[in-house]
Amino acid sequence: MIELTLSEIAAATAGSLSNDLDPSAPVTGNIVHDSRIVTTGDLFIAIVGENSDGHDYVDAALAAGAVAAVGADSGALGPR
Image 1 (tube, rainbow, N blue to C red):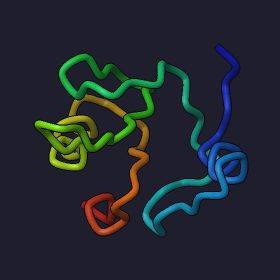
Image 2 (cartoon, rainbow, N blue to C red):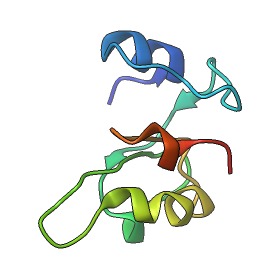
Image 3 (cartoon, rainbow, N blue to C red):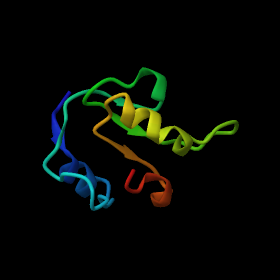
Image 4 (cartoon, one colour):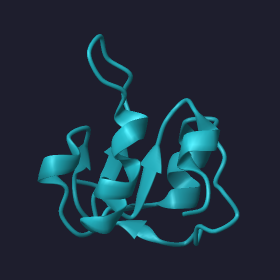
């Protein structure tokens, strides 16, 4: 996997970073959408599904070592 920083990912996706994130922080792990398998360095993607909303699992993903979370609901991704 190519190692990218949070600012590079934000630029590539036309996204923005919350103020509490270090733009130079590298994503050294995988890109995952299941908070139960997050490991240190991963980037968590909060996906809204038919039965669950990934935004509900952002705290768990960050606690498990995710560098950051990506999602559509910025209010659910804000400072923790």
